[in-house]
Image (cartoon, rainbow, N blue to C red):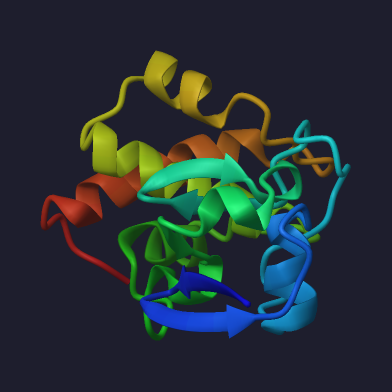
Length: 156
């Protein structure tokens, strides 16, 4: 048995230690907000936090996550009240939505590290999160808005 701390809850699974974290989250824990995109850590759709850092869950074996705290999009907040989620809704970022949980998780990690990110900081942090719909201008605006919300600059 392998124990993982997912969204603040210790959960046991009987799985191959080499299983990608993505599949444990989606198939075993039924947390389907984290998406499968490429399977090679190139697109960012599967981004989750491991000890507060964004990681591509398709390339992290569950054995590498046994001592860490895993946060998925479902665990980012209760009721979509995280500043990034509020900004995403306020600015209507989503088009098809497939990549957005990964985008949101990367943006949330960025704002934890840099509460007032520059455009270069945003570009750096979001590099590798692909949006096939091209919502990049709205993503950038939402990250800036989330930074304002986080500083107490109002919410939706």
